[in-house]
Image 1 (tube, rainbow, N blue to C red):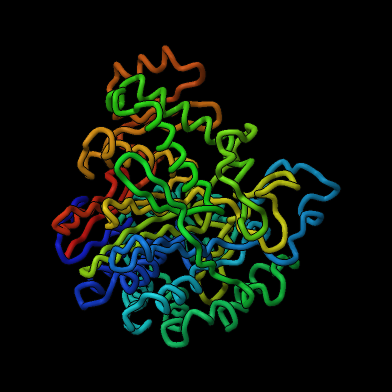
Image 2 (cartoon, helix red, strand yellow; image 1 turned 60 degrees about the vertical axis):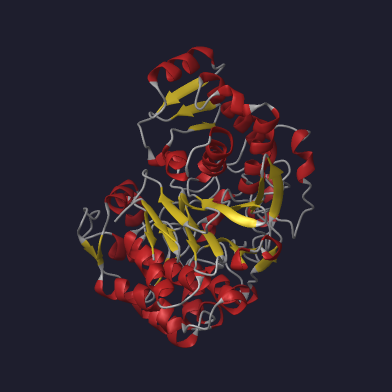
Length: 512
């Protein structure tokens, strides 16, 4: 299977070949992009259980029939439980040494199930949920050979998994991490998927599966309130729009800081005359690093859950600097285009790899740890409080020209998300790269007062940057998964779609 594909009839670009096949088959049967997105979402939850699943949330951006005017975002980020007050979470105004990253206290109320149901209601073609879930059921029941990435991640988080007997039973093999090409079977998850296919996603919220999830989280004391799952609401939001150079960008607005970071970074680079700097020259690398640093130090003072706090992104240029909060690397992204031109680009996550570690017994659904994305201190825009969405870095994005989709893309990667997307789009806008070259090109990142350089940058450029950057510089290997896994499409004037999967990860592009 290829990292690059072209088609005039439809395209799926996803993080795992088996999930991409599930979506392509739906398109081949006449399903639309949203039908295919549901199939991919459920299948990727089986073959990448460490990154996303029905115990998590995310964002979806849809351009029906490619119409910019009808483009809309679904926000299904997890929400904090009703009983998690600031006074409870930060006793006596304490600053916590850390925010929980594993265990029941780290889990928010998940939104993916209701989001998939809402998407089908709004844009689906009428295909049965049983058909769309069938590939995921088969993969969970019959198993699949784990990838190098799964083996690597399960090795990194083997200690975490050992803390949770149900997770260890499912995601480790006889008490050890899986090796590449060993077969992972998830009978309990298959049971859950079959039940959802028969009764609908609401079983996750008001049915037996939902009651099991709540019981698992509250096994050692109350964390989720009774009725919290039933109360969960998917939000239909207006995308964040921006004009940059010759392009119109639609991306995820708050509670995502990734979308705000992306459009602000592109505007700043454009105002500096970034095209004159030369691609990945020392001057360009310094400009990228400085831009990312300035934005990271400002975003947290501005972005929060817009249903709780007023968010004025125009303050980005004047906001006080503050150390950025972290993010979660356990995310996946896929992009789909159908024969009618509808674009669906979706990021979904369970937080850090393997989420909270808590699994609903008998159902194989791994719960998220999205509270780990929130602040160690109370009183802020990203502090824990009842019924709040944590600030996120995910930023599914569609770029339009002349009112029609030109690019659509997104990536996992925690704090590296908006810097990666900025560089891919800038490579196309300012340096004339095609999509394949733009995605593969070496990347830069700033975090924790450190400038990170991918090994794909020329050695003489890395040496010049080390000598001239006023701070720490760390070099990483070439094509390093640290810098994300962009899954993108471009659509030319003849409506030919090119799909590109990032060479840094396991993804593929499959066209009809």
